[in-house]
Image 1 (cartoon, rainbow, N blue to C red):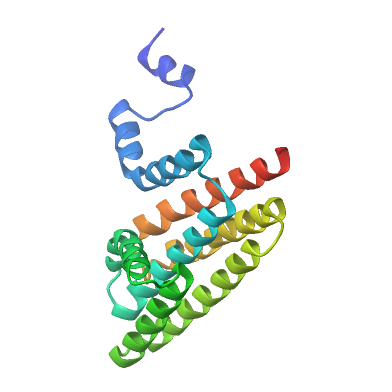
Image 2 (cartoon, rainbow, N blue to C red):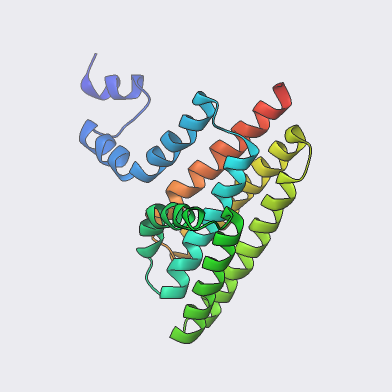
Length: 194
């Protein structure tokens, strides 16, 4: 069998080096999938985790918009949980900390001249956050489905930002898309099969 026939046999015409480069370029998707699998496989995937997760994701987008720096979205993945922990240490509930942080970012964005993207991201935070709070106030099984749908719905927001290549880096939008959809749909499947 010739090398050319062997390539067709394995289902690709691309040389091995090209396939490796393509896989390396998809690191954000692999990261997102890896992060989604952990809570699904460890039993940590519940409506509380999803509700906080989708709100934190929207807050990361708002931080990047308000500060006019796309890389801030990546930094916010570490920063948002630290802010939540700091809030809890001083006695603030998570939701109050997330809300106050969102308001502070809106104020910064309006003062810094990033009004349009800041207001769009603030609206997204309000919408996703409201759906997350609704999910927490429903029966646990139904709430998990609503939280899963909300997180998977954030994937649409990720696609928009990926294609427009604005507000957040494409790599973050790609990672977030895979994470949101995989974890959201995985949790819906868990809720339906319980």
